[in-house]
Structure formats: C-alpha cells, structure tokens
Image (cartoon, rainbow, N blue to C red; front, side, top):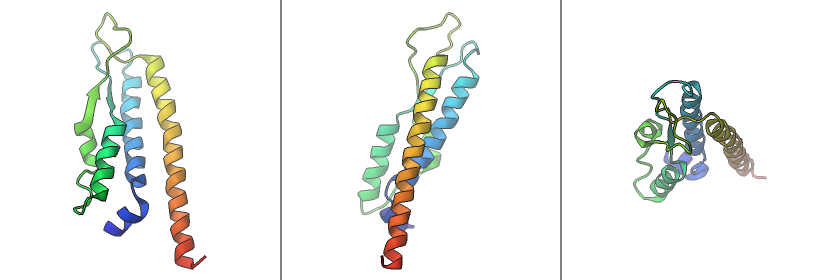
Length: 124
C-alpha cells in the first residue's frame, strides 16, 4: 500500500474527499427548505494538507476517508433565514458545481499518474 501512496500521491485521497463532499452538499440541497437545518461542509484544503503531510512523513497516511465526517464544519449563511435554516440554494448549487468540476480535475490527474506508471512499466 505504501508503494501506491508514493506512486499516486494525494490524488486517490482527493477523489474520495470530492465524493464525500458531493454527498454532504447533496444533503444540504435536499434540506434547503427544512426548518432549522444547519448546512455543513468540509474544509477541503486543510484536510488535503493534512493528508499530504502524512504522505510525506515516514509513518505514512494517518487519515482515511472515515475520518472526513469528523472534519465537518457548519456553514455560516450569507443571509440568515427566519426558520433557522442555513442552507442557501444558490450557494449549495454553486458549491456542488465547483466540486463536480474539481472532481473531474482530480480524476484527470489520477489518470495521468496511472498512464505514466503504465508507460514506465512498459519501458516507454
């Protein structure tokens, strides 16, 4: 497993984080009209920095996908609603679209890494 972590770097973790974030944002979208619902999100950059530093340490990655739920933060709304719901439709839609594009980017980087490894194994 250590070989794959070194060869693929942070990209597999990044994909998993993007998938987890898509689920969280989907939950926010589904509850945009639920009174008292508190929107949640991940601090993607800080989690990725933790994973990246773990990968470069001699002890390997200490954080995995199941730890992501512990990293959820409540989102502060731009315009508070009277019913206490902090999920805003336009914000959640924009975050979902941006996360989707970032997922595609991470997938492209991972694909490039795998293709590079494939070429190295074949001796090209």
